[in-house]
Amino acid sequence: MNNVPLISGALPVLVLILGGLSLLWLAWGGRRHLLVVLPVAAAAAVVLTFLLYVLAEGVLYWWDASLPRSLYIYAAAGILAVLLAAVRIRAAPAAGTRALAVTAAVLSLVAVASAANSAYAQYPTLGSLLDPPRPESAPLPERAPETAAGHPAATEANWVPPADMPATGRLFPADIPGTLSGYAADPGLVYLPPAYLADPPALNLPVLVLIHGRPGGPADWLIGGELLQVLDEFAAAHSGLAPVVVIPDASNAGNANWPLCLDSDISASATYLAVDVPAWVRQHLASGLAGARQWAVAGYSYGGTCALTLAVNFPQAYPSFVDVAGEAEPALPQGRDALIERYFGGDASAFARQNPLDILAAGSFSDSAGVIVVGADDPVYAPQGRKVFDAARSAGMDVSLQTVPGGHSWQVWKAGLAENLDWLGRRLGILAP
Image (tube, rainbow, N blue to C red; front, top):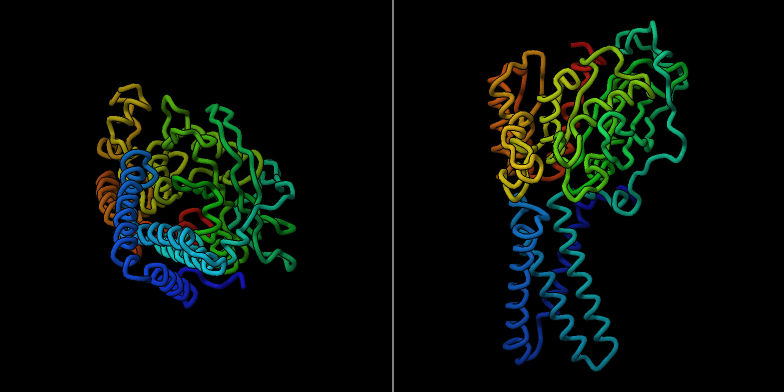
């Protein structure tokens, strides 16, 4: 039951049909209903949908122009269903008719939610909605750096898995302090692959730092990105080996002004992600000890911009990166001037010193490599990704540009990581070059 798909197959089609039929039932009626009530309700739904658009994209900045415009049509249909149901409930003399009107409105709203989910692929299965993956309550199995002293980093060439190695990895919560940065962080997540958990274990595994989107949090990688399944499948194909994956909080503990992975007047987010997080991993997980080539950063949307920003500002920390549907530079919906004023006290040069495109234009990155992934149907972020690719290539990076089916959604974000794990495995040393 948990594997029932919510973004493909029969169920979303059935939900859409039931929602459409419910709306038609609510819209049907006598002469006065068809000539007066329905047109007035439809006009009100259009006005309310327009107000939603203004609030969402022009005032509160809930989302931007990457939102599929078809969702506003679905939203208008949902609002219309609620208005028509309210009229029927008010006019109906019988409790059964009122209950039927409520049911029709609910089915219409469920169809709207299903359409939105299909557009973003946030909940790919019924299980991801009703019983999403959660980290374990057991303590994180820490490992002191001394345990790896004198041992080579584990690779597919030198690792022989024990017969009783776990079949899958495990997920744990992790409080990663901002020791140097002073950054306030909500708990992050750590995935430990089967080889880490084996007895005896694989030693000194490489590290992949994943950055989530905005709005969102570390757990989004588990739901829409189906991260545990993706990583376990990679590990199963490579004798239990996979990177130790760390997903820190990139929201600055829910700061109203998200830190944009910059060191700014808001917080020292960049230092946290590029210095504090790696130091904590080395100290507590004895991983990534063999040098910078064992480290990579990746992210989607806001997190993709972060991955690029960190890779360019801290190439010694993250010489490998995957930028999935990120922006060309850290940005606010209100524009660059608003960002510079809010984050840097109006000092444009302070922003330029951390802005990836400015740094790439002036520097050389022959030791860095990256993958930039864009959605074929993403009119907002795909052009920005191509701009980043051109700038990175001009700066000497070993960089590739990939276009995958889909818009600004988990269809692209999940594929952007899953389809590049082999590349990351080679860059990080698990797999042979």
